Amino acid sequence: MGESQNYFTCHLVKISVILNVHNGEHFIKRAIDSVINQTYQPLEIIIWDNCSTDGTKNIIRNYKNLIYYKSKIKTNLGEAREAARKVAKGDWIAYLDVDDYWYPNRLKEQIKFTSPEVGLIYAGVDEKNRNGKLLRKKSPLYKSGMLLAEQLRNFDIDMVTPLINNNLLNKNNLGFSKEMKASEEQDLFLKICAIATVVTIPKTLGVSTIREDSLTNKCREYWSIERNKTLDDLELILKTEEFSSAIKKARIQSEYYRASYLASIGDFENVRKIMRSLFNKRSVFKFLYLISFSPPLWNFLHRRSVKIVFTDFLKLNKNAND
Image 1 (tube, rainbow, N blue to C red):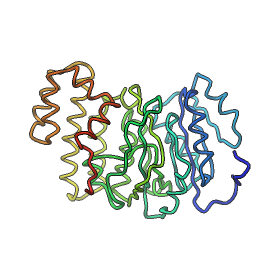
Image 2 (image 1 turned 180 degrees about the vertical axis):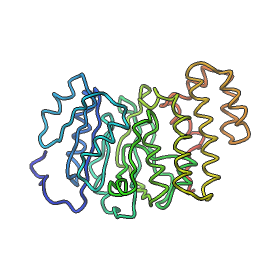
Image 3 (image 1 turned 90 degrees about the vertical axis):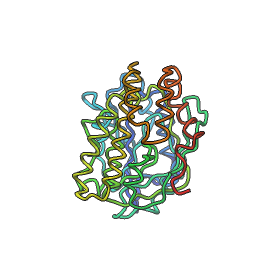
């Protein structure tokens, strides 16, 4: 694990790193190395193998001091993440998907902000394609604080950099939903935003690999359903009307998610019906309604790699603090 690192020393901030993998032989060495090379070493590195059938385990064998679990049955990602968290010993959890990786100072930059009142700490990421080409430098849109309203308006917490308060999760009986197939991370992070302070770091601390065949893209039929389930849960957690306007606007966004799924299966007649109903809700919906009459253009602009560049060009994700 690196001779210069005293890996098993007593850590002031005890971090469990959880690396989830299913058939990740092409990426896993890069991901593991990015954790091992951190300037602040975690308490433990847990590899949760979700029934890989490729050479993943053979690569893992080349490393010492990793904690390896192989699931008995293949589960959805939320259930795999939660199963790994249940065996983690750290007070703080950092997840890493196998095709992503961290820059060396990721954990060192974050530990200075840990406290019992903080629920989550996240930072900027470089979004790259599978060939390593930089598509976008993505910085947090918001300043630190209670960020539920902001995140409901424009969710920007990726899965690469969050450092999560594990004690807070346990205290409030929170975790990744085992039922969700596409939105388990957004579901959990929004619930954390509802009860705790979120710290944002305006530095780039990791790399997110943008893939058209990502699990999230494959499960877009669940985006709208799961979004509304999260919003229902939030209304129960909040028990006030303070965020009713933000939740209402978030439900409008879920209608766009439904249109996005219908477009993916070629049902552009109903896509146009939905976008027409949203026409006056946001200016971008007017544009999307117009391009829904050209399915090839709609599909091209909704490819993940293209959408990233295009939304930046239109400044749809302009920093909310500007």
